[in-house]
Structure formats: C-alpha cells, structure tokens
Image (cartoon, rainbow, N blue to C red; front, side):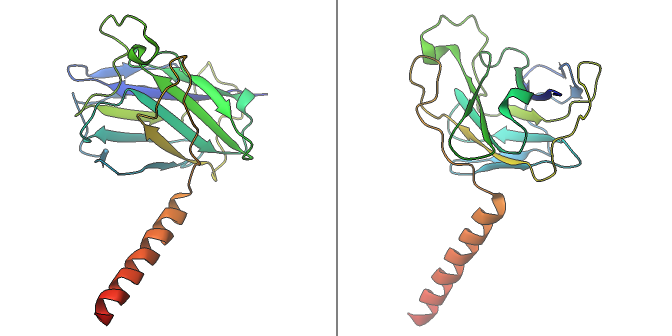
Length: 198
C-alpha cells in the first residue's frame, strides 16, 4: 500500500527556508500574513484540498506549544501514514488510533515533557512562530496514489498534557469544522433571542 506522508514544517525566527522530503517551503521569519492566527481558545482546523494542502498557523496564544496533537478523520489506514518533523522543533512523532473509525492521531512533543536534556532544539512552537502542516506527498519518496481523500479533515490541539513517557494523556475527539460552526451559530441565535426578550 502506498504511504501517505504527513509532514509538519516549522519556520522559526531567523530561518527562511524549510525543506522536507516532499516539499520546499519558503517563508519569512516568524509568521506569514496568510497564516491563520491562533489566539487563546481558538480551534485549529484543516480540510484536505485537491488531495493534500499546506496549512499555516501562527501562534499568537499566551504560551509556547510544547505538545501538538494532530487528529485526522480519514479513510487512510494508520499503517499507510507517516509523520515527519522538520528542523527538530519536536521529538520524532508517534501515531495513535482509537475506537472511533477513521480517526488517526499524530503526536509531537518537546524534550522537556519526557525529562530529556534539551540542546536548544525540540523547543516547540514559541509565541510568534509559525506552524506549517503539509499534507502534500508528490516526490520521488512517494508512491501513487499520492492524494488524501477529499473528505479528510482534522483538528490540531496544542499543549495536551503528556504522561511523561512520550504519550498524550488523552486523545480528544476530532470535530468536523462545519459542526463547530453550526453549534456556534445556534448558540449565538439563542443568545440574541434571549436578549430580545429581556
């Protein structure tokens, strides 16, 4: 079976070129104007576009991201997914599944979480830095079919607690972005209706 490559690219302050086995990405130091800005409480959603996609996020929360859990709702089996860290921002990643059908998680954490001495790398995504999630797999290291199914979507969670042994303490459910939007719209409509009654 063909391997799909999940590559997380990180552009750190002072760096301008990031390379992976599947793509060369050029970015300015820090965040890109096209990135989705992530503030405290914001959700990080992505949805496959044309069989892949590159998604940029800017950490404008009040904390550095020492762990990152990327959840996928996809029909691709976990054995056909590979995750990669570029530039040593996190330790090597691990893949997990749950009883939920079609849900796969990629787990990334820093050396601080498992009491491994840090050498200036593996420090996570600090405030003001960029996270690039690259789902493209179209070079000589990939075999056809290259594409993720177009119904593949996911959610990333930062600073999920670690068990100290290199594993997440829990795996939160991956929500469909449309479901979140509908829920928020319904709550807003209820709030407006209540205010009008008062």
